[in-house]
Length: 384
Image (cartoon, rainbow, N blue to C red; front, side):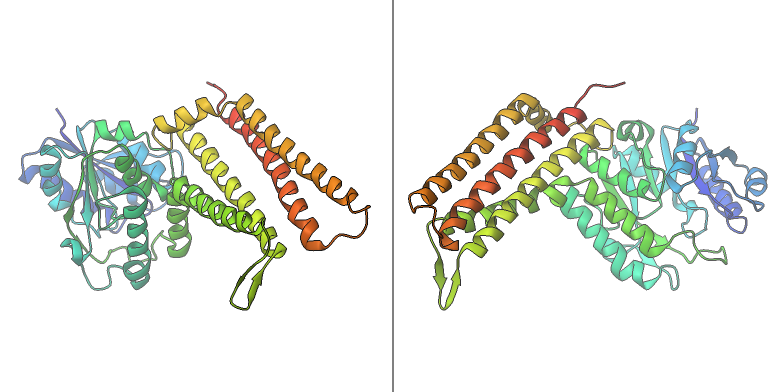
């Protein structure tokens, strides 16, 4: 029976893939582990494939391009209870994989290497570009801790191990570099047991530029993390903007206010109403994103969102939106009566705008709620 499956994604790694396979096989033999080594090739046109076979690995052809696609193909063919994944550039020491296996045997679902000294790891000279070490990885790891309460101090280490059953539960979908982020995010959201162990990162031996594109791939990771956390991307900013706008509006409806020699009047009232509309729209976008990501399997089922969508039926949204529209129209009628009482003469801008701005804002808000309710209804349609 196979206990350990070592999965190595590969794309034109003829100089290093053989050494990675040899180290993995030596570790399996040294620690008397029943295992296999799988090379998931992503379309290499050098000698990587023949070297992988000659070195004793099982070769899998990944039909779709991408780092995540290669790993998914490899894991799909893995027979082991535990899976270890690592790059084929010889920057990770596969001879140390037993340290990961020990943690999995202790009951952890996901074990990730930590390359940074603060986590006990070590980065050899020339092994990591300065912008990755001091900018990219620290920022993305901090965001991961804040957004998803991840316990890891190295969010993007490529050497990691996991239970095959935990991997199946994650239901990973991304085929590109975001695969690494998705794995940790879903493990955190599903409250799996996650830990890290210190490792050493070596300078890769490929002798050519990396497949990684620092700024492009860094942005892809950041974008994916933001989209996976609509609470931080949309909901919290929306609530803040709505609160600020509501405060300005409620105060300025009574009349202008002065702070020292600075006066705030209808211009500020207009800005406050704009903040309310933008804030409500952001809250709606948070709901759109959450519903879509949950239905498509990017996010696990959220029972709070289920309750909200059950309450926020299309009919409820239409009724709420119509109430806001009626309120806005009533304010406009009040404005016309106010104008009539002054013989339809010229009104001061401050007096008229203090009626017209809230009225139009309320009407637009009602329309916003109605259209958003229709869109939520479309997203929530049951489909195969």
